[in-house]
Length: 73
Image 1 (tube, rainbow, N blue to C red):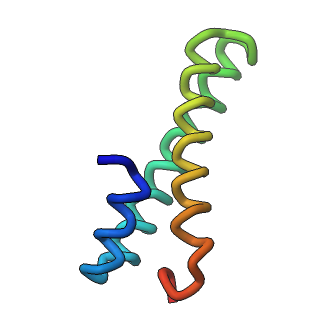
Image 2: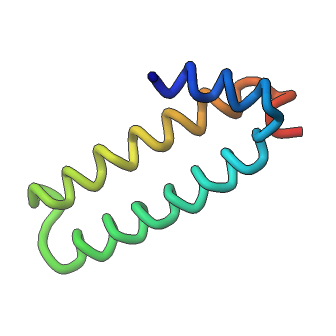
Image 3: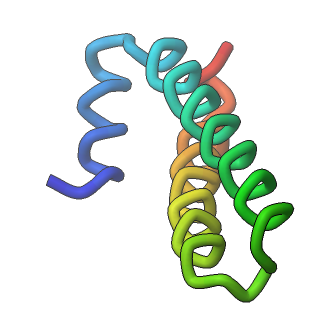
């Protein structure tokens, strides 16, 4: 099941806040990991790029979730 469908089903169950909180925790975790890796290697290191790609995906999910203002408030 795609994340849009998952978000829709979570909206129906009223789990918005929990979903947003989990996404924010994951975003912060991957952001820190990316910064730490980049400091030890380089921005062009494949591991940094992989973590950055995962972070982008999480940010996109959060954006889609938060674009529905009623979802978070």
